[in-house]
Length: 565
Image (tube, rainbow, N blue to C red; front, side):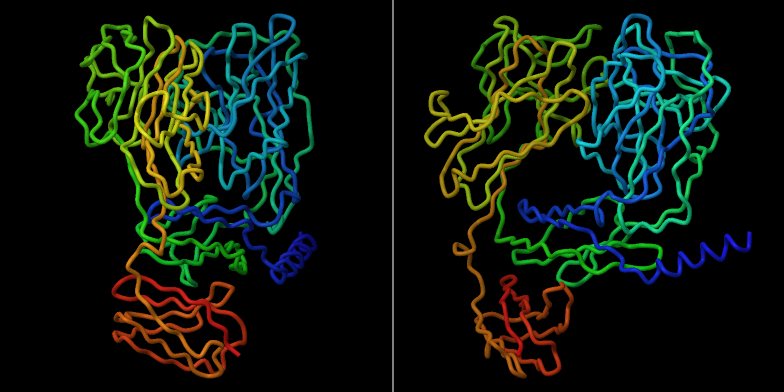
């Protein structure tokens, strides 16, 4: 034991002095006055491989539960790529079919965020491996692997005598419930470089002692109060990468450690901002990532989130809904009613909690309402439009929205994105995307560039072209763009001498509130409050090179590149 401790201590001592890899690929996306940052985990997934195992080598039977995902909660040690999913499969006929599914884990239960769903045909009984290497599924925290039961002849093995505290069932309608028997479901992950590890976490492979003929059971219910603490994976090891810190113009802006691979910096004033990210390890913080620059130049947007509308409104303020098929619309079974039920219409501001009786399964992306387009009957093909008001597009214009099919039982909903430079007549629109399909598993964010119409006045339309499906769902529709800086009333400043050999002078037409000098690594090397139209400061002793000078004024933010010699 003493010798082992000495070896481990030596490893950790050496690792502590190794360079701590920063995040890579930092990107900044501007939407109105908000910046959405994304990045990749440090290094590449070339570190240790671990098989996450939460069963005990034994299957006492096999389950199917058509329409449900029989799932296991996985806890990797650090950010990783999911390489392989493994299921112990039994089937009745010549082959078996199921969906291999991965969901993101929440704080104490699975979420409905589906990372991937992959159809699988099992051509042998026993352990089936599903390769996800080329799908590049990465996670910074826990995740859930599901056996999507889709027919009556395919089963997944389980151990009725072992409660691992990690079994969950999902009804694909937004509801997760715990279960007290262990599914034979596993995952193989690969960790990223930079993760400090004390022990190898690669359990040896084994084949469960499964009875030649397993009891095959159709599950008819879910939900067991499960108070068992989740067990650890076989030979689980320690965690090294804790998360990330985000810096804007050299100043950390996150209050708590960021554990996802994104961060939103919202409500910014017009100006130019430099962002960097650093990885936080047990041993400390890494160096800066690459620098991402975001320019907010007096943003503008048009948004339709359905929240300021009455329940079941079929008019939408400045936006125009047009029913060009003219057909009556589908409704729901179970005596569920709501205003305009079965009527001809294009879209309706749908609120599932306001139907009679209240419904479940049609939750909006956000708020209480979403835009619903019900299938027509007849004709079987929808021709329903949601058209924006006419808008003069600035720089980097885009249409962003969330879409969803209510169900895939009748096929996925289809839609197009179109633009008109003249009027709202169908012949005036040009299709820029589609026909497209809306996933049914969960709300999906989509974005369509309008760059070809920069500087033009246009109408932007979403057209439902489904054919005898059910409900096409849209929410949080937004047209975003940036007003060109040349069209704004921006402050005018002179910065001299540039290059600076010892002093830098700033003089302008509006009051300076503060100045900040930032180097190319994103570090603030000088800052001061001012409250005057003129200001000077010494650059003596500063490293030679290029800097960004951020001048905060009563009219907004001005950024200048300066050179110090």
